Every structure is written in C-alpha cells, then in structure tokens.
Image 1 (tube, one colour):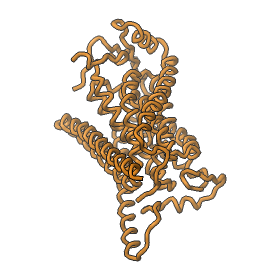
Image 2 (cartoon, chains in turn cyan, purple):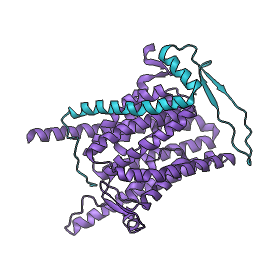
Image 3 (cartoon, chains in turn cyan, blue):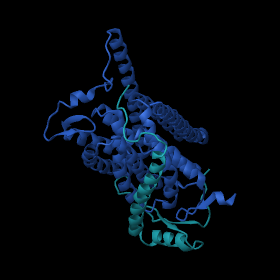
Image 4 (cartoon, chains in turn cyan, yellow):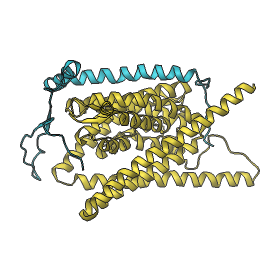
Length: 93
Length: 350
C-alpha cells in the first residue's frame, strides 16, 4: 500500500463541486517542503514553489540538454566497440 | 545502506535511486528498439519505487523527452529517421491530442472517464494485436506460396497492404518521403496522426503505441524507419507534455534526470539491436508487448469491478508489466550481444 510520508508534502485542496452540468473542480496544488533542504536542492524546491513558469523553463532546458550530452557520451562509447553505426540492412524478413 | 536512498526534493519521498537507473535502462532499451516512449511501463515501476502517482506521469513524460532524443540521435545515424514525415505528422498529432484532451474533460464532467478510458484502451490494444498477428500470418502464407511457385519475395514485402490503397488518394500536395520510401498526399500522414493524437489525448498515453502500427499499416513505412521516425515524434510530443505537466507541478525533475542516466545506455543498446533483427521480428515482439499490456488492463478492470480481489489483481497487473519489461529488455540485450559478436567476428575475418 502506498503511503505518503508525513510532513513532507503539503497539499492545498481547493474546494470544487462537480456536477453533471458544471465544470470540473480546481486542480490540486502541491507545495514542496524545503525547510530541511539546503544549497541547490533548496533553491530548486523554492523555484518549484514560487514560479511554475521558470521551473518549467528550467525543466524544458535541462532535459534535452542532458539528453544531448548523455547521447553523445554513450554514443562515443558505443562507437569504440567497433560496430558499424552508420548503416543497416533494411529488410522486413 | 542509507546511501542507496535519495530524497526527491519536490515529491518529498526517499527513493531507491539505483531502481530509477534500472527502470530507465529497461525503458531505454525497449523504447530504442520499438520506437515508443514506454509510459505504460514506467508508471507502475515508479509506483513500486515509492513515487506518488501524482508525479509518476509527469516525471515519466519528462524523462521520455530526453530518452527518445538519445534514441533518435542513434537511429538517425542508421538512416531510420524521416524528418520530413515526422514534422508533417506533428501538425496532426498536436491538433488531435488537444481534441482528445478536451473530450476527456467532457467525460470527466459527466462522470464516465475511468471506465470509458480503460475500455477504450483495451479495445484499441486488442485491435492492434489482431492487426499485427494477422499481418504475420498473411506474410507467412505469402512466403509459402512464393516458395511453392519457386519465387522469392522482395525483402520489403509485407502481409497487410492497406497503405497501397491509401496511397492512391492524391489530394495535393503530394509529397515524397525519401527515407520512408513513400509518395503520398500530405493529408494522409496528417489525417493518420490526427487520429493517433486524438487517441493519445483521450487515453492519456504518449502515442508511440498507436503511431507505430499506424505508420506501418496505414502509411506503409518500413519497420526500421517507423521506429526512428516515431521516436522523433515522441521527442516533440514528450517535450510539450513535459512542459504541460511541469507547469501543473507534477514533475520530479531529479528523478527524471536519474532515469535519463540509465536510459542513455539503454537507448543505445535498443537502437543498435534493431540492426540485428528483421522488421517482422520487431513487429512480433511488439505484438507480444501489446498483448501483455492488454492483459494488465484486464487485471485492473477486474480489480475495479471486484473489491474482494482488488489488491490481488492490482498487484498481478503491476508484476505482469514489470516482468514483461524485464523479460523484453533482457531478450533485446541478448540479441544485441549476439548480433554485435557476429558482426565483429565477420569484420575480423575480412
């Protein structure tokens, strides 16, 4: 059974009444607890809490950049294996 | 052993971080091999590691954006990515996805979303599995007939050939998609991608699971080019999905970054393994994955309908998916090792 650790996530529930004819309720907002964190982790968590927009920009920048760097690194290791990485036979059977 | 657990700053949970790397590795291998992001595999995995469900989907989509970028880079070197086809399909995918997402909100308002989505997903998976195995059976029949007549079939011939009929539609503009080797009206890939995007939006999936058979059977794209082009599309749709979920506060970026470390290795293995497997080998394997996914949905439906066996069937569904991921990753890895050994041995002989 999944259990949420106490005191680490504070959920602010905005009340919403859902009826068949009405619109959906408000989304749940999560607030991360940065009190026990320091340094980069605290900065990170505070950015998440204070500015979803800038946190999104950071995410959309970091993930593809990290993908590119890791892709190049692992690609160069694969290239050293001696396998031909530039051609393949296109055949269904 | 405390060093094996790491605090996720946003979700606020201690997670076994090597598990994230192993999950990323498995999904990277499967994604690089099949051309899909693997969302249906990651969510139960993250749940098992102690991740709150609220963050599982957003974290998964975010890691998928990086994972599929790595796979696309590798497939591109093989000539498996048709960028023109991928970019043409993005238009339809985004419009279809938004239409599907709006429909989900309507279903939520009338209180019918869970059952509708699960049943729709099950119906779709059944259709895809039927399509793949019918295609394999037809192909084998064609092989037998050709052998009996003393002929050999073209290496790119297939069983189901619906794409030949659809290619006859010549509404302008007609475009030649060079890498895929197809010439058709641009409205065909846009229309197909609109439908697959709509399905993805309604079912809450990345779309690779649906786009892969659509590219093969409706557009007539060779399997290897389908894998690469699909991954290219996943990069774009996953980045969009990542931005959307992150803005809603549903992404644990640290976990996504850790998973990417494993995925970067897995993606290389999965992509290179496609060199050593023929198109129909990839299709059959994909069909097995679809059947496994359908079975897990059936378990979840039983769990929802019968509270007495809910825990048993929910656990069975999770175990099935994780077992499938482990078995498929291992099989692909073994094919990669065998193929690489044979290739290197052949090169030494030359």
